[in-house]
Image (cartoon, rainbow, N blue to C red; front, side, top):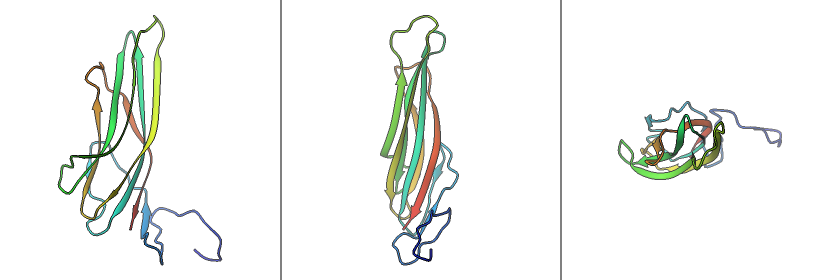
Length: 140
């Protein structure tokens, strides 16, 4: 960064003179356990979309995405979550769609593991669709 002008940070940028070391947007898959850093704290931020539908033909959907963290693998501590569901009394030919999108964040200690997992509500007949729409991981 130079010239006193602000600029957008790019993936992998290193920031000198700051406690922030780098920002990355790695590829993350729902259900996969990962360890972003063994030596530095990492701020995790994932924008997750949960799309649920409810219809007479397809039943009802509901559930949540969870950000699990822990010092050991597999991580078991729920750090954050986002959920949604579609259900209720339905009219023939009507489909209800529920879209929930929210950020899951956590400052992960050095050497810890993380996982984005999903859980379907027990009262629902099917799982919603989960998508990680945007993410960043900031290493300090």
